[in-house]
Structures are given as C-alpha cells and as structure tokens.
Image 1 (cartoon, rainbow, N blue to C red):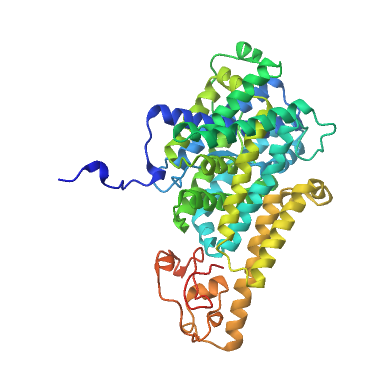
Image 2 (cartoon, helix red, strand yellow; image 1 turned 30 degrees about the vertical axis):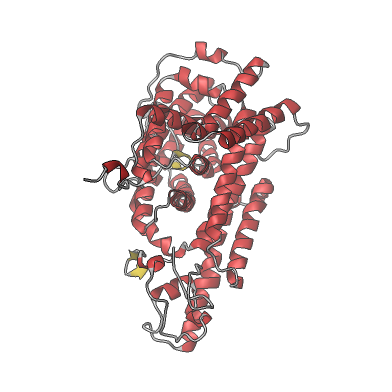
Length: 515
C-alpha cells in the first residue's frame, strides 16, 4: 500500500483551499494593496460633481461593498460567469473622465450621479451580451500583443506608486519639494518587504507586504503621521441599498460614451487575465475571456444599481499574486468578503484608510513593477528577429509611456478621443493590437494572395499570427512543425485557431518561436 501523502496533488494551485486563518491574512493583504486605488474614483467623481461629504462616504461604502460582490463573481464564479482566477475587481480609471462629463452635462450633484448610473447599467448589460463575441478577438492576442499590454500596464502604474511615496497631489502633478519623511516611509516599507522576503520562507514570506504595511504604519503613528481618530467617529454599521439616490436617468449620448469606456476596459481586462494566467500557469482560452467579461458586465450593472461605477479586473493585485506566489482564487474570495464587511462597517474602512499614502506607495512600487516583469517574461517568447515584432512592442510601449508621462496631451482632444489618449494603458493596448493586425496578420494575408496559394497550403495559425513557414530552411509551403505539446493545446475559436501559443519551426528545424 502506498502512502497517500507521497501522491502528487491533482488540485491546481488556483483551486487550492487554504486554512481559514491563512485565507484571512492573505485576503487582508490584498485589501490593503487594493484599498487606496479602490476609493480614488468615488473621491474624484464626488469632487468634480460637488457632492456633499455624506454622499462621498456613501459612495465609498457602496464601492467597497460592490467590489466584494464583483470579486466573488470573478474568483468563485456562477455557471458561465467568472474566470475563476485570483482576480480582484475594482472601478475602472478609464471611466473617470467620461463619468465626470456625463454628470456635469446635467448640472452635477445628485442628478449627475443618476445620469451616470443610467449609462453604467445599460453599458454593463451590453458588455455582458458582447462578451462571447469580444472573446473571439483573443486569436489576435499572441505573446507579442499580450506581453506588450502587460508590460504597459505595469509601467503605467508605477507613477501612481511614486505619487503615493512623495505624498503628491496626483500622478499628473510633479511634487516639488518632496518631503524627506515621505520618502523614508515609502523606501522603508519597501526595504522591510525585501528583508522579510530574503530572510523568511513559507507563510511569513508570503505576507511580507502585509507585514511591511503594518510596520510602516506603526512607525508613522509613532512619529505622528498616522491618525486613527476617524475610527471612533465613523458609524458602526451601514448598508447600501439599491437606487439610494433615486431612479437613474437614461440619455443616449451618455450611454454611448459608457459603452465606449467598457469596450476599452474589456481590452485592459484581457491583458490582466493573460497576465494572471502567466503567473498561475494556467492557459487562457476564449471561453475564459468570455467568462471574465460576463462577470465585468454583471458587476458593472450591479454597480449602477448599488450606487457605484463600472468594474474591471485590477492590475494592482496581479502584481501581489506574482510577488507572494499564492495562486489560490479563494484568497481573492476572502478579500472580497472583507471588502463587503468594509462596505458595511465604516469603522473597519476607517482603520484601513489610516495607512499613510507613502507607506502604501512603497509596497505598491514593488507590486506594480512585478506586473511589468510578467510582461517581459511573456515577451521573452516572441521572435524579435522579425522586425515587425520589434516595431509592435517598441511603438506600443512608447505610446503608452507618452500618455503616462505627459497625461495632459489628452486635454487637446475632443471628449471621445480623451478616453483613448487620457490613459497610457488604453493608448498602448490599442496600438499593440492595431500594429499586430497591420504588420503581422494583414501582411501575411497579402503575401498569401500574391503567391496565389490555396487555403490548404498553409495552416490557419500562419494566417492568424503572421508566421511564415519559409522561415524554416528546406520547409515546403505546405509543411509545418508537427503538433507538439506547445501547439496541441490550442483551442478552436469559431473554427479557427487561437494564436496565443502558435509555434513555428526555428532556423534549426526544432524548438518554438512565438509571434
């Protein structure tokens, strides 16, 4: 009889159910990493629409509560809804500008909120209905595209962390002078995280971010820079109810603007899903993408009903999964429950909000950078001997950094274009997709037309990825690399082949080169 303990576990790390106390610790760590980014959108919208402080508090509570519901949908899933990966949901930053414009168009205040909620509800429904059709586009997301998008996401988030470290007024503002104490808090928190990860193994190493945040907050409190007075004055219990501010109003132009926002958000979501798939070593199929987008659609509709905003996958927590190596989706489920409690227990929210921004920035700096590292890992599979791939990566990253480093370039464009040029992630992602279609897919189709080849002469993946079998010396036009493990797992997409892991013969007749 064999010892069962020696048998390998058949449970994927994503589906592993950890002990309750570990789930709580890991989940709380995710919440701390997520909190400041989660509440910034309600703060910005409330300020622009001149809402009262009481209204702002309710928006934050509603946001946290709905974040929890949305994250449960994504991580745990219900039927064909939810990707069942460790992905947290949060309000998309892409929607900030359009929402302010929608609310301001009707005079701001509560009427502005009601106009926003009407467009959010309809956009969420449309996103849900579009999910399967949009998922078919994953055939145009090979590593050269997904790697570029993931890299851009990581790089574009770094200014947010830097702004927190210097106690800045926002990523679009250069802080001058920079408080030395703020830098010490940020770099001290980062250093403590690195020391813990270097000296410890196992559970302690996986909660290094949580410990670093706690140490940084305690030091700041001892020096008078962390205050917990708001905890005593916060209400004990609060529950958001549907349509708290009244019935939404529906305006066609506002709805169209929000649908555009959600379309762009879906592209960002696909990048985050691929990044998470890379980290947890789980292949992402078109059905996975469809499940993710359906959850986004339902969460967004719930956001409009429960007095919140559009939802998407948060890249901030993707970096935390990479840093800690804890891949279980049940950790995110635990974080979702904690967020729902924060939305119902304002005093808990006040405790989390007491963590100073420079301390959060120090932890975020490491997490956001690891997202960029995942992008680099993905790009390592790209064949950069092809000049087209160099152009795609270089141009898309360059455009993404242009909008990130000079965010005010969006001010010169009309509102519909600001949605694209106002975000480095959006601009860079769209550039990566468009350039891939232009330089790889379109060029290969042209080459095939000029050669007057029949559809049977080359396999579908060559058409979809722009890979040319002539690159393999001695290979005939009709020949392709045998279906090895690198290709055999490809999923069919409406009769075609996904190019996510397309393989071709290398110069030496073996190995794998991804486009």
